[in-house]
Amino acid sequence: MFTSNSRRVLQALTLAGAAAIFIGCEGINRKHDNRVLELSGPVETSRTGQPGGSAEMVDYPELIERMEATRQSFLAVREQYIVRLREIERAYLIAGDTVRADWARNQRETVEKLELKTYPYLTAEAPEQRVEVAPEQNLPAADDIYNKALTLLNEVRGVPLAGHLEHNKKKAREALVLFKRVLEEYPKSDKVDDCAFFCGEIYKEYLRDDDPDDELAIRYYRWAAQLDPQTPHAARFQCAAVYDFRRHDRAKAIELYHQVLETEENGNMSNQRFAATRIEQLTDEEGSHLRPEVKPLARPPTRTAGQPAPVGEPVAMPVSDESSDAGEPPVQP
Image (cartoon, rainbow, N blue to C red; front, side, top):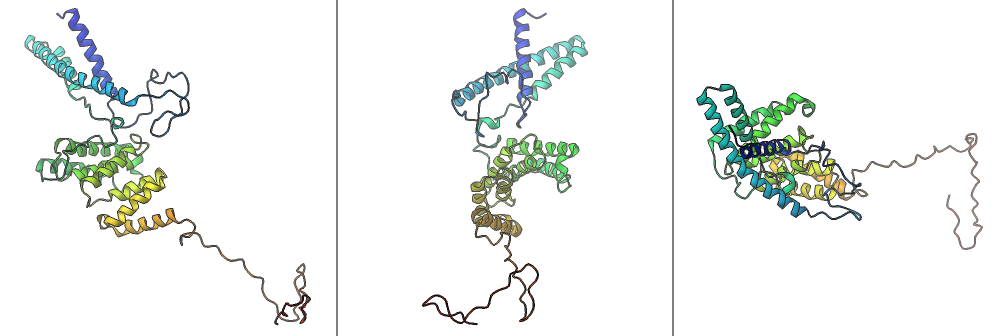
C-alpha cells in the first residue's frame, strides 16, 4: 500500500513528533537522557551556564541557531504530515475500516497538539513576551478566558500548603494554561498585564518543580510591570521578595524595593512599609535600629557604709586625700 520511501518518511516524522513531545516543557526537568549525560569529565559552570576553568568554551549562539533552524524545518514538515494523516484517515473511513481510521485520527490529533514555543533558554524574557503584546483593548473573548483562569486560581489561593498538594497543583496548572492562552491569542487585551502577573504567581507558589530557580516567576513579574507601570498587582514587590529571600541577591532586591516605594505600587501600604524596612536592613546592617538591642552590663548593687562585702569580693581600699603623683588633683569624695 505504501512505497518504501513513504514508509521511511512516515517513520522519520513519527520519531520527530515523539521527540518534540518529550522536550516541549517550559519548566526545568532535571531528569536528563543518559545520552546527554555522557560527559568525558566534570565541567564547572556558573548560574548562567558559562564554562569555568580550563573547560572548552561552548558557542551557545551557534548551537541555538542550529536548533532553531531544525525547529523551523520540523514545523514545516509537521504541516505536511498532518495533511497526509488526514488523507489516510479519510481513506480508511471511506473503506469502512473505522479501527484504522481512529488510529490515524489519534496520531493526527497528537501531532496537532504539539506546542513549539520559544523556550526560556532561547531568550531572557517570558516565553510569550513579544513587541505586539500591550494592554490596549477590552476583548470579551479574552475576558471570558481570563475569568475562568482566575476562578481556578482563586480555588487554591490562600489555602495552607496549597502549593504542596497535587490536586491544587493541577488546578494551578490549568489556570496557567488559560492565562498563557490570553497572552498568545489576545495580545491586545487589557488583561495581558494581569495574566503575566498571575503566571509569575503560579510559578512562584505552586509550580516550583517547573521553575526551581524562580527564573520564570521573575520574568513574568518584570513583564507585568513593563506592560503596566501602574499595575494594580504587587509585581515589583513579589519579584523583590524572590530576589531577597530565595536568591539572596541583595542588590536586585534593594533596587526593586526602591521601585515599590517610588511607584507606591498598587497602594499597598503594608508592602511599602515592609520594603522600607528591608532596604534599611539590607543597606545599613550596623546602624539600623532593627538590630537586636545590646543591653548594658548590670552593675553590682551598692552597699551602705559599714555593710560587709560578700564572700570572695575584694575590699576596696579608701582613697587618700593626697595624690601620690605630683600634679594630679586629689579625687573628690
